[in-house]
Length: 447
Image 1 (cartoon, rainbow, N blue to C red):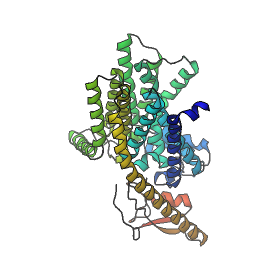
Image 2 (image 1 turned 90 degrees about the horizontal axis):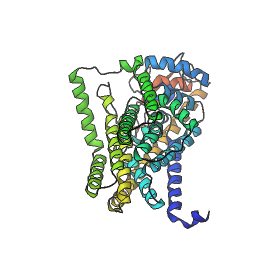
Image 3 (image 1 turned 45 degrees about the vertical axis):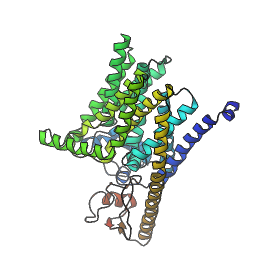
Image 4 (image 1 turned 120 degrees about the vertical axis):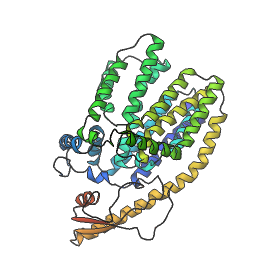
């Protein structure tokens, strides 16, 4: 307690973790169920409402045949949907804090002041630069698939990164066995996120082996099991059916589309990485951190490779590119701080803080407005059920910023009521039909 009271930097660091937890808790609690959330309340096997974890394996077996191979992630989604929304809100806030604890573990700042600056930079970069922020970290189905997935990927990569950086790890049979059980699950978690993770693990394994002239059995064993998990994911009949085709014109069109989106949405983050890397080269910063940073950056770019042959691409698919690039930048910032060159990190934090003030104000207001519309929807549904009505017309959401998970998601179809997601929402509330109506008297620009 004495050390705690005597260290303002440590107190500020604790405050930052607490702020991350509270902000994520409130924003998650205010984000309503959307689209896929309603669908995953039901079993893919028999369309019955899931009331027990024992129904999930059969549901995911059919899901793998009809929808996609992400049965690990979506089994977790169906399990969480069994609990009250508050459980997910708390878990999501805890996972956000754990993500920053992993960032701190990767960067290994020498003191609390540097650690505080690095984690503040990480929080500001993610909040300001993550496309489809609400879908990636606030929406239940999206957060489990993307935000939580990144936590799992960094947890898997941690022993590879520490081995490459030359950090000693205590031997533990329990941890080794847990890692081997974890590897195939995380390998099967996401088409693009798991691909990036496995690429980074392979690069770090080879680089460590070349330097040390030897290799422990855990690294290749974990990598092999991760690859087997990824093969299970990609071999799903539904995954093969979602390909856009292997012809050159389709590949070129997808490549051009994704490249244009990268330029539109990720260019400031890429500029920052290039600037930091060039400065580290010029100042001859820690070579291993620079190489690890480059591997993570390339892994982030590699996460987009799986979409060159995909049938569709949306902004939330950029999330792993952003997560890996932000961590790559933090590693470079930590190398600059070790050289006692704090100017670029401090100036970057100041500029991002100004941007954060605007984005947070607009984003929080947008999340609050959509939450109010959700409450009005639920009130309308309750009134209809109390009156014995089976058909309800509801206004679609009109989000204004990327901080609302509703932006870009299929909410309600206004032309046809008997298709998804209308029928999914109707089944959830015990209605026969839900019709989408245009939003009344609302306006706003998209951010």
